[in-house]
Length: 145
Image 1: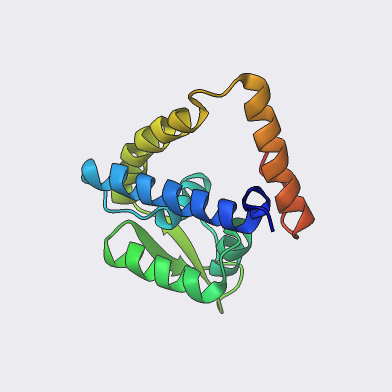
Image 2 (image 1 turned 135 degrees about the horizontal axis):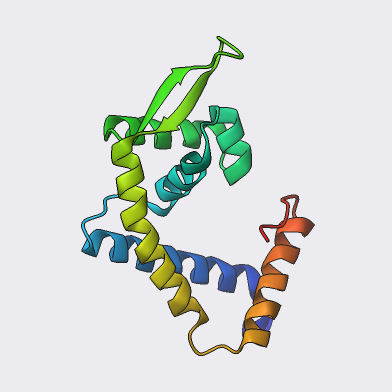
């Protein structure tokens, strides 16, 4: 297979490099969130969710969501509360400390998004987003637009 046809390899390397860069940028600013934890806090910023809803919304399996929420809760960034609609489940809510932390992280994430766009034309970015969304649709996830 020609080197330029190794799409899985290229996507994997790009994703790994991007997440490593983002973790470093967050850490350099004293923000001890992983990109996955930040994703959860962004979702919770709008409203509380059950673990299952978080899992579906972020396409992360339930066991991984449990571990991520456990760490967010231990850090005081999120909390579990009784679900008034279903006492068998909990709602996960962002705390005030979590809101402060995700607000700090937002600026860094916005900066990294700008770094991603740098050097590419608007048309190239639209093509890139189209390809990424196409992959999400093709492999069972909905578009993120």
